[in-house]
Length: 140
Image (cartoon, one colour):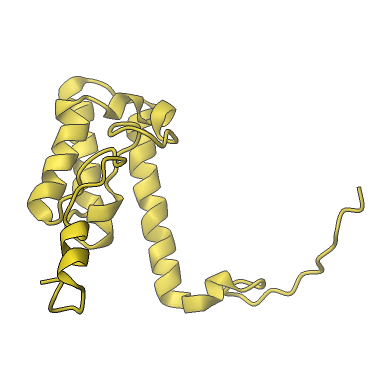
């Protein structure tokens, strides 16, 4: 429980109360993650419009909102990519949006593996290769 982790009863209650400003309730676990994938891709048919709506910040279906479940391993990038391909097959829609979700999952994995391999060096000015470049400033 949250109290076992050192939170007061009031803090625990507040943490478990939905914030009305939120666009959706994020419930943890594989079941909820798989349900969100199904809801976004098939039930709400949002995948076909992803490329045009992905940078919208407000609303449940402006972006996939898969990141919470991906981050803690409740849903795999491979599973989401498979569902995107299944959507293309079943709905007969293969466009920039269906491609882009898979592309972003690929880029996500690339940077996760790069970070695992190189650690904090990915944040250094010289990067993982420690390339020294001359930095300048634009006087204009």
